[in-house]
Length: 379
Image (cartoon, rainbow, N blue to C red):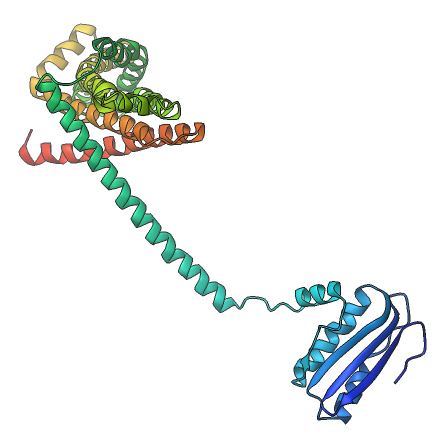
């Protein structure tokens, strides 16, 4: 069968169940293209056809017109259950045709895939959490052994490093602790005065600020400041040492990084936190006094006399206990993340962020637990 024009399509029947399409000429959109109906009519007439092949030795230039024709032909053969053999076509045509006839994913398959991915993510999260827990337990055990060596006089670290860390955790932290504590005392006084003015009981602002700072806000705000300042610094310092292989060098020389690097930092911050907490308490009380004197017509003597009569030593001890716990948490978070740091600058940034987040989260959790314990035992 022939088609007039520059391009031709010939139907050959070498066997009873085999049909071969012979292409010739240029197959382009601008030319006069043969119709698929000729092939469809032949298939309807000869119901024995089971396979369809191609002969493209005489084909010239081609474009998407040939692909359109073959796509329609492929669809027709699928409907008639005829096997299409593509080996007689040009390689480029075969690749494009396979790409065009690719079967898209079913919705059910994608739903199953997302479900599998969700289960995989949960499994990976559980494994990661389990490994992180083991690393934390191992770190705490090594720190405990370092403290035992310190008590026995076997710990190896330089006293100058310890004094330097104390200065960084203590004196150098006073400006930011002063600012935050003063503002926190003023905020507590402003908030309390709004309600107390309604009952003419402005003098009890001193009680509110004193108890709030002594039992809660003094220790918590100092701990959060130290988590963002000192905890991040610990993590960045130890992480940078990991990047520069300084920690590996210490191990090579037989010096324990836990004793030389972690122990001084944990001791310094744990010792400085109660002192900073006491300082923050009094600065917060002064902040409340500023508001009371300037906004509530309360004299300085009245304010401090009211605070002295209603604040007991037990209130300050409650806050000091929390500050010690918070100091251990901040130091542990910073040093742990620093020791877990990788070998790149990106890892240093990630571990520093993780140290701050971990420290603040556990500060809030531990504060809630200690407050519940205080309430139960009547402390």
